[in-house]
Amino acid sequence: LKKRFPHCLIIGTRKSGTRALLEFLSLHPSVVAAKKETHFFDSDENFRKGLKWYLNFMPPSTENQITVEKTPAYFFSGKVPARIKRTEVEANGSGGRMKFLLIVKDPVERALSDYAKVLQSKQKQNIRYPTFEELSTDPITDEITSAYRPIRRSLYNLQLRNWLKHFKRSQLQVVDGAALVTNPVHELQKVEKFLGLQKFLTSDKFIWSQDRGFYFANVTKIRTKCLSTSKGLAHPRLSDRFTEKIRNFFRPFNEDFYNLTRMNFDW
Ligand SMILES: Nc1ncnc2c1ncn2[C@@H]1O[C@H](COP(=O)(O)OS(=O)(=O)O)[C@@H](OP(=O)(O)O)[C@H]1O
Image (cartoon, rainbow, N blue to C red; front, side):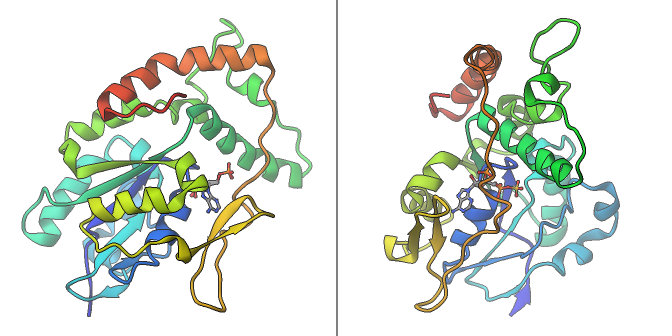
């Protein structure tokens, strides 16, 4: 047993189901996963701590197991792909073999999910917080603005273009976050295939929670595991007019993303 450099990284996108994907995947006996988000490649301070510091987060594994780490900030941060590339060579003596999972959901839903999380913490402190519409609209032009980070983080095509400068398209698998909620087995079996794992994640490994509206991992006969209640927060409702406006804003970015991934999400 030893701590190994990850074979696979879940790089984002934030709020699209990265935690569920990691937890579900780690039910597989051939997968070990870092418990925490390490923020190794996106944080200058952590990256300076070096490879040894990073490896400490990895659980010990056998030669036949694959190690997975997830930090959803990786996808959005411009420096990350080049850093990963260099560090893979430092760790393994050669590069080009890592695999990346990118889970995505409707960019409007994803931005709302980012917003909902901040709103909840403001409300707990009794602090007034602007509406999602206010934050995502430029006060001068009245157009949707990517100056608001939750909007910018949903421009998947721009970020993916940066990753594809450093890695082959075949090293990256796109996972449908909406499908992971409604039919996790189907999505996970595609991931098993991509990672070269034996088929293990079958429907008996998951239990539907009517209460939460999510599947749980059926960890053992007596223990099930649901994600924390910080997942599944209510999102604010948008007016029809604003919905049309924000959907129009995202359309060209989405189209480019569909072309890059050769997948059509109908967002
Ligand atoms: N099985 C299961 N259980 C719980 N939650 C699930 C599950 N599958 C997907 N999701 C969705 O995960 C969303 C949170 O995404 P992340 O885990 O990527 O968030 S984070 O970026 O790590 O904060 C979270 O988004 P919100 O609903 O907006 O909170 C969930 O919709």
